[in-house]
Image 1 (cartoon, each protein chain N blue to C red):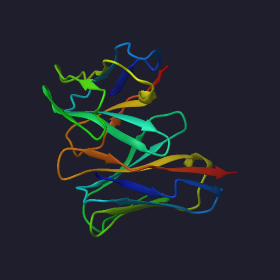
Image 2 (cartoon, rainbow over the protein chains, first blue to last red):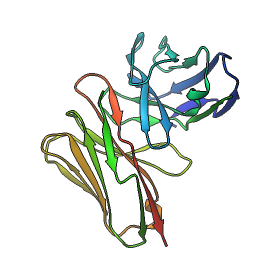
Image 3 (tube, each protein chain N blue to C red):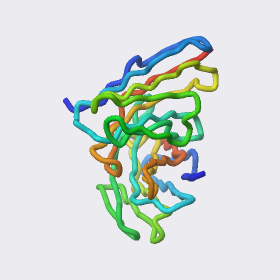
Length: 112
Length: 110
């Protein structure tokens, strides 16, 4: 089944404890992206990747890192999480940049 | 920076009434995409419009892309309870970034 998977789905952590949210797609998509969703703000792009080894900042990259070593995986890293990073995170992929995006199920992160 | 605003933020309608959400971007978009997110779910792609002035229909849903490629609308005729959710417009700018609108949450009262 064609899909985007994310893990974990839920995470409660404390300020400063490094964490990684994994994202994987099995559709051979070139473009991958991370978004955060907050009430009233819609989805805001954190980082995106046009292809393997090519990543760039989105609208709200502060406090986040990403890597794209393989085409299928695009992990999101929070090196020192803070409470303002409490949010719902979505990973998405598309065949190419301007195509329809397929979303993962989301990761709800709480930073205490 | 780039902004994509949607109005209204919330809309409650009686089942059978029509519904419209409007999307306005501060800059030109290469195309406009619409997504639906059910409560507790993830955004799901509905449609893409590419040409300025384009109109597309999907059953009871009508999508329009403005002439200047900076605005769009989604109109639902005779809403049903299955239409409940948040509707987002989205689009790539002329660079490589993707922007989502602020969303319109639709509640349909049976």
